[in-house]
Length: 316
Image (cartoon, rainbow, N blue to C red; front, side):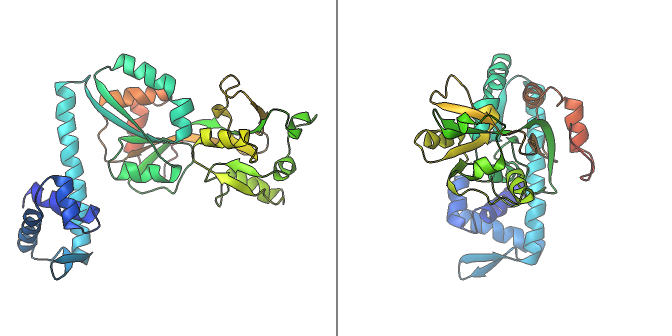
């Protein structure tokens, strides 16, 4: 059994059983992949894939177990290589971070600037994605870790650490009627206007949806939803509706023409969080980035979470 054979089988699985796409991804030939998978199956004594003619159309029951194990083996091989690299050159390498637009645009710039000054030889990649995609990017190895603003369903191979609380504000164009209120903003005030907000704002169990449900107030119609806060502000300026977004995303200077009205008293706070694979090997500069982002995320704290039972409380 060779690592190359495991890599070929796993890549075919990742490419939705398309051997041609797997060959392109691995820069090799389609017949070569097919041959090596056949050799692996012969050695194991079981078929990994169900075939229809020359096409692979499904994964067999034993194949699923083998592929899951092979993925873990390949990740550990990658970790071993990274350990060697770290000890050989602790100040150089690459770091990929999946994050939401709001975090990338408003929370991370100062962190990134400080990190680049400290580690100029590290190639840093910021990968913007929707909140729902962050977990998968970490699971698939596209990112070393993710920084998000909405907790998704916990995956058994992931560890999540809450960092700091954030809440929401309403943004409106200059001269909007809501600016004339002499009292704090209410949910009914928000419900009186079409809304421009995040894609996940009214998903079941979101803090926004729960607030309207508990108050027995019909939520406003969402005329436009986006994961990009700048898009939300653009369409609020155009008069599509009022915006409901993270307070951190408003800047009085940059957002000329818009005014912010606090809605933080209306909703439960949410928490920014970091997502890592439990079996990931994080290099020293990865720990350094997280410490810059949230000083409470010490290396000791992160390692304690990575090796803790899943049911432990990771809030900090």
